[in-house]
Image (cartoon, rainbow, N blue to C red; front, side, top):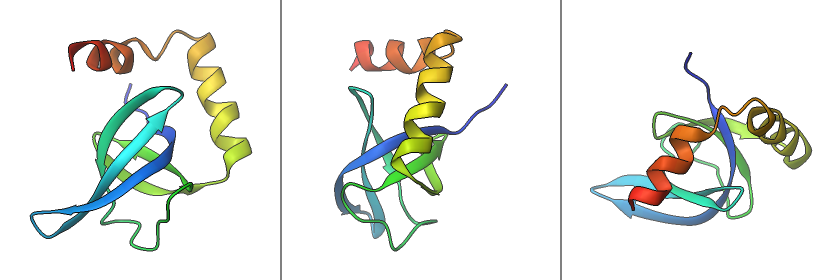
Length: 85
C-alpha cells in the first residue's frame, strides 16, 4: 500500500530550478520536492509521497497520523532509508 507520510519542513532550497527541501519525519530527515505546494514555509507540515510534498496538513493531524503509522510498524522502510544514508 502506498501512503503519504506527514513531516515537518526544516529546510527549503532550489535544485535544478525546482523548489526542494528537507522534511523531518519524527527524527528521520528526507529530501522532498515542494513544487506542488509553492506557498510552503519553514515549520509547515506536509504530506509526502514518493519524494513529493502533495499538500499541507496541520501539526496536530500530522502527529496523530505519524503515531498511528508507528504503532502499525509501517515506518520500517523510512527508517531503513535513513540508516542507509
